[in-house]
Length: 134
View 1: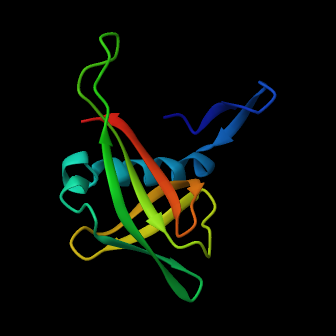
View 2: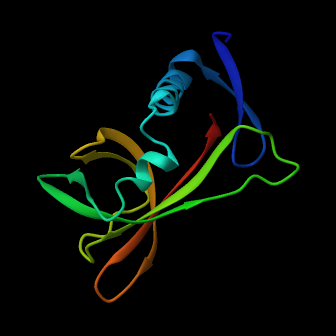
C-alpha cells in the first residue's frame, strides 16, 4: 500500500490518510480474521457457556445464547463465512456497541464487535456479525 491512501468522509469528500492512521485498523482486522477460532462451528460448540468482558474494574458476564448461520445467496461470492452470534447479558451495565476484548475458558481471548439489540426484563441481548472469506 502507498504511504498515503484516500478515504471518503461522511459528506462524500475524499481525504488523505497517512499509513499510520490506517495501520491500526489493518492490524486489528488481520489479527481477527487470522484467528481460526472465530468460526460458526467453534462458537456453536460453546453455546450456553459464559464469556467475559473486562470493563473498568469489573467483569461483565455474557452467555452465548444462539449461533445463527446464513446460507449464501446464488449471486454471492463463494467461500464466505457468514453468521451471527447472540449473547444474553445483565441489565446493568448495558454495553454500548463497540469493540471489546472477550475472554472464554476454552476459546481464550479475542476481540469482538458487539451491538446491544434488545432489552428484556432479565437481560440485554447482544449481537456480533461475522462475514468474511474462509
